[in-house]
Length: 253
Length: 263
Image 1 (tube, rainbow over the protein chains, first blue to last red):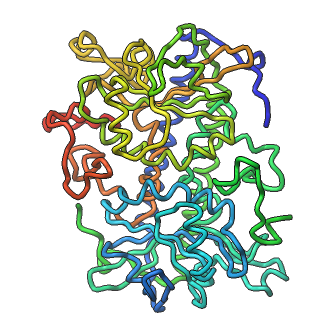
Image 2: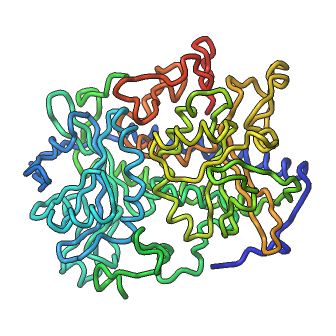
Image 3: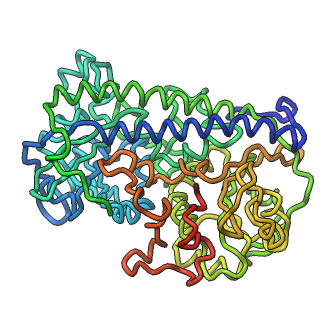
């Protein structure tokens, strides 16, 4: 961890700080408005009609994509990386998922259902969910095209060629699973539309730990983390002994 | 709730056409992410102010100094939770924000950050409410200190009587005796404490991840028709009944005053 020595940092009077803070405030307000404007552009995106009948494995049996809306008109699906032969969910995805539960009731009251979908079979998801103490709904897309169609699972051929379509471009990606968030809308006639998907750093605003670290003196403090910025992240029950649990050979290296 | 856009009102296109539009938006989203990074760097470059007062807080286990709240870490984030001394419950909008905090704390601790909520209400009002809400974060009372006044999140009757109070680095009319905000402190090896940052009003909004999700869905935050932005928010155990906490709503504007505390 880097050291922020106070003797290196400028210490000023309240008055001088206030002047600097007000300059920054104007820039912060501008960013807030840009965020609002981009959210409006997102809502203006066209939609695509979903024509396939996706069926998921859930603790209550088979459910269709329509069922996942749970009576609401908007559905958010977090593509949580958990390949069928992994023993645990990806660390970064678990870090994201640790922040879901607090939002669920509030989202429900804005007509939004938030769920997670992974490719691993339910028999792997459920014990892990219990271990992590998560309450959000988590479904398995095992044996369906869902993950492929939303570009969060890659084939062995794609991996061998280092050519995966992820985050709207062909690129090399280190694992067979990718993470992201997809939004769907269901109209009163029961038609379902894919409205939006985001990948990569697009999910960062849901990681409240990052939102708060961005306010702190040391920030995210990841410049020395190898091989990825999130290398410091563990499953939340494994920080005490700094235990690193490999979820796949790729992640362990 | 406003009428959802129906499919016949909304443009439906082929995947190819959608991807083209999505990529254009992606470029803008990436620019926004980079601006956010740049702004976080500017925040870290802000000068600091040495904290000269010895603030004392009431905790469930007795008196705590500001230094104690760091809990062995060098960085402290404080959420100024609106809960006046006479109120029955904490402000619903602050409760909304704080519902998103517990999941982050264990990860923040790994990044050398301690967290505490601070309210003006006495600790014996805070504790039962915290228990009811099922929260785990550290929450202390500043009832016997100047802390809330010094960080511009509590206003005296005299200040309120003058019409305008100092909030969000400005002078404004404010609908409540308490205001929301986030303040950040650093403690060096000698035990000196520095105030590094404070944010108020919409400056705290990124910590409300429900809003970040709503910014991705077709209906968005869906607040345009409401008297103020967070008028739909209830304590998370009160959505079914729709019950508004204190009958006199000390944390919310009167129906005649449409300004939100978070605007």
